[in-house]
Length: 173
Image (cartoon, rainbow, N blue to C red; front, side):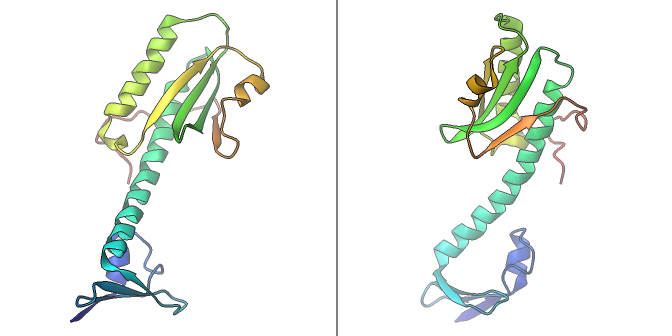
């Protein structure tokens, strides 16, 4: 028995309908034939097709959460003159927020505030796919700071106005 899952499968997974023209499921062999717009058909096992659709759905959700994370971090940085620079980078395979302070002197209150931000992000249900840690660095040269940054993925936060505060459950579509 074969069932055709047209563009509904792509749109149900949050993918634009142009992604796959047609998916045909063959129950007796446990496979799915995928026909993209270019008609270059290929066959995948049913469990692999389901896995791919689930990953696609999670990737889109991760993108939304990543944009929300940018807003939360920008909001936290705003109005903190003790922050000289801030970066979001990859470190040991996970996201890391690197905050460079404007002074060399240790500040326990600042460290506590940064730890509170870590905890807030970890406990936010709207950021449940985000795994991040943070690190405060004292004022340092660009070369010294660069040693903490991933060479292929680093975003620098620039002081400015954030889009407004976020509370759990208020995630943007």
